[in-house]
Image 1 (cartoon, rainbow, N blue to C red):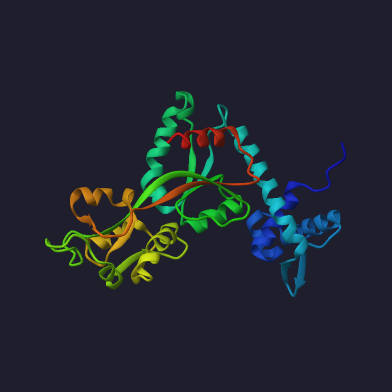
Image 2: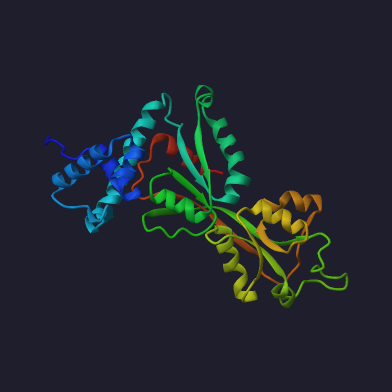
Length: 304
């Protein structure tokens, strides 16, 4: 077997320089001196026989060679981290997973799902089981998966990453809701709120990049053509409460509004619009090494 000339530490330093734009800034994040960081980069470029950056003043700008190396380096570093996590798990390798969830899933479904998942593990494993959950919008979760910052993503929007595998998962209903005393609601003599009334209404929405916003636009715009935006929120819970307080109307997951529908603080607006549903998805990187723990979680999610 030939001796490997490229090592993981060199790749780690390369990735850090890509992220921070200079050896001095990268050095602060990897506990090395600036000179040692520069030396490691120079050695990597010497071994590979190519430059990975264009030197512009004191900045390092990644070039074509570097861009080609980056996804390979990220995949190798993630695999090495996976080996470390695997070695730390003495039984079934179920712990230490990094799970990303978009907002609705992370706040309203994932806590119960993870509790059920842990309950399926052997008692000795349950006591040691741990996971890190990151809750962000769909775009951020997909970006973190592409960078190997997460092992698995559960999203409610569309994933556009070319390096990611998207597997359909659960179905969710989207409903138009208003405060119980909202003037938009039909009178006793009326059956549905008209499309013109919906076009004139103030809509509360999620921020750009949210899977919920993308789904709602796709569902409503073919019928309403535009939505009169009111306040944008970074959280569905805030939209729900603002809607209940009469700030506007909204279209949200039935999972999100279930409690306020039961309490009577919100009502589903009767309309001639068709029933809207969306598909939640499981997302993995194509080059992700499926550890036993990750496989165990995937098999459980497929049965939910």
